[in-house]
Length: 148
Image (cartoon, rainbow, N blue to C red; front, side, top):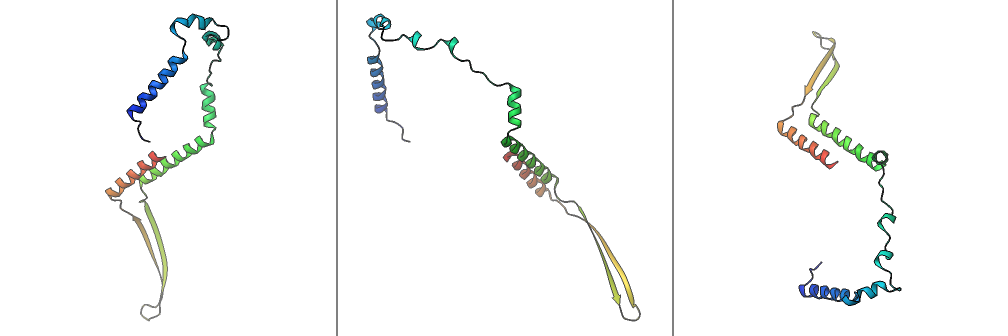
């Protein structure tokens, strides 16, 4: 939108002022205009302040109850809780201990060691989490919580 030029603004103000002054009664004729029977006075045209309805606000408990029952608010709260949980998972990391067990049978048919042999392996692993990965996960967790 273009800003208005100063001459246009001044001419608009002067026109509005001229219309206001021409619509108002002259200074000497105020009493005659106010007392005329055809024109209502300001006191009779507007109702008294005591006659106007007073605005009322609902009770705080009622507002709280209505807001807690609103589906949109419940959805927003659930999204915030989910973001907080996802952030906690990111901060904790997924580098947990994992276990593996393998069992296999070996069958040897050559003579000195012929027979069946059972072999097994048991593995316990844990991945390492580098400090830069932990910092990146922390920043992601904060971003999740602020976006929710």
